[in-house]
Structure formats: C-alpha cells, structure tokens
Length: 54
Picture 1 (cartoon, rainbow, N blue to C red):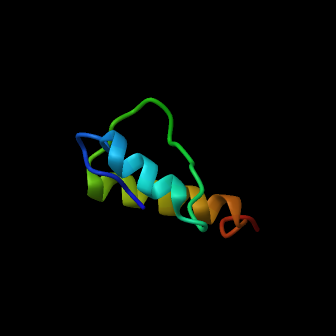
Picture 2: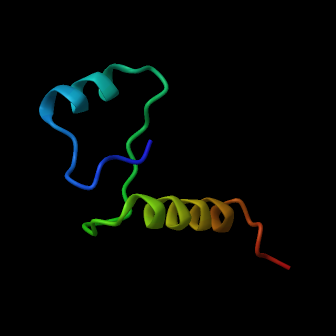
Picture 3: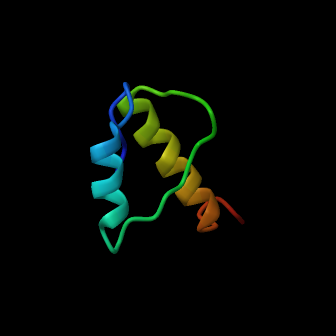
C-alpha cells in the first residue's frame, strides 16, 4: 500500500495496522509522489529478489 502524499491520519493508520496482512516498510524519511514511490518500491523489491544479479 502506497499512502497519500499528505500521509495517513490516525484512524487510517490504525485500520491498516489492524489488517492481518499489513507489514510496515519505509523508504526512509523522504516523501515521494505516488507514481515515484511505486517505481522505487518495485526497484527495491526486484533488487532484494536478486533479479539484477548475474
């Protein structure tokens, strides 16, 4: 789940935390636009999965 640029409010955060499949991750203190965050997260996922190793 990529959040809104303005961040989640307290009610939204609690609802997300209550979901059994939710796992918090972060890209650091940066605030990225939604489309940029999706690309950055995909690149990190691919790197972690070893997709770019020879």
